[in-house]
Image (tube, rainbow, N blue to C red; front, side):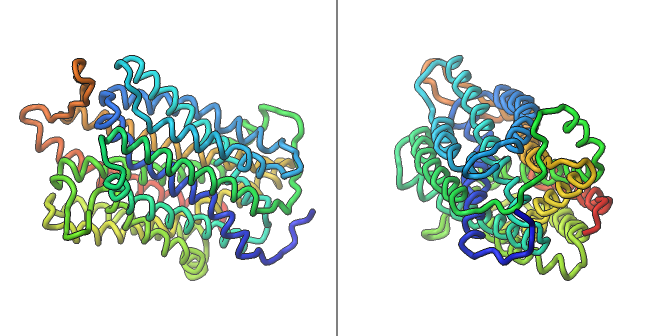
Length: 455
């Protein structure tokens, strides 16, 4: 079939949005904001074990993500090229997420094996469904405006579900009751089931209209061609920076409330904890993700829209560092975080739309479609940025004086600040939420400005 212009139905756009509502709004959101806090303060791993876990998993992803992209590109079935991975991968995807959030009653060594095994397996399941999901954008339409709309729906879906997930998180914990280990197990079951259903629905409700020129035989030449593709190099570096930016903020939010703001802040029936705090930002991202196509038209190109979004993220992140660490300033902190989310909301849909442009460029330049392979680098950048930032947080907090151990007698996690290190831990947490992301925002702005495709 050709790539003639058409008007996609609202049903299909919502169906496409469900894919990232599941991945970006549920599984990745919980993993980003609850890890490494879950592993250190609930599951019982040390900070060193948590840092090593996330680094090892990233080495695994360097291999699996591009291989999955190449495999997806060569899939031929009655359901299409990319959709069958969503339809049939949805059940193991939800099941492994549930098992990852379980805390088995095992010894320290076996718990470490459980954590490492299921974390790496979850990353593989995420790759299995998310690489084909991202690649779908390249075969549903060739129309640039339609791609921007699909991408915008995707981000609105992710941020809307992310807001719901994070806002109800403490209330779900209250409703479940019991120990934190039990709460997280039930959260894994509930949200894992939702992610499964949404992923399957995405595969069933979308259509593949464009028949790509497929390289049927596997060749390592395709991997080499990536590095000859200048736009791909730039967009991959931009993606790594955006995911470091998000990774630092989400993974450190729990520590910020625990050690800088004195825990959850209760105002009547309203609970403001780290998930609610970040959930407010998700709602902002949802709104400005929807406005991103209009903003792009106003400034004239995706590239410049991305640059302006990065400037907003940089300025507000630096400003955040100078706000006092006190619950008395919670509304000031929320307002500045909302302003940061304006920038994140604008750039998020642009990233995936720009990946589709890079895939088109690669097809023209090298003569065969590598859409899945190119989009897999976006997924790899997402996991690389999120997990490496989480690993760095664990290492830097450990260096600042925050330590986590497991009591051999009771099996309970003990997290404490070493004597004389309270201020260094608080300053490190505050900087990890503000100055470290600001550096990433500056880098992604510079790289986006240099992006070769001027669409």
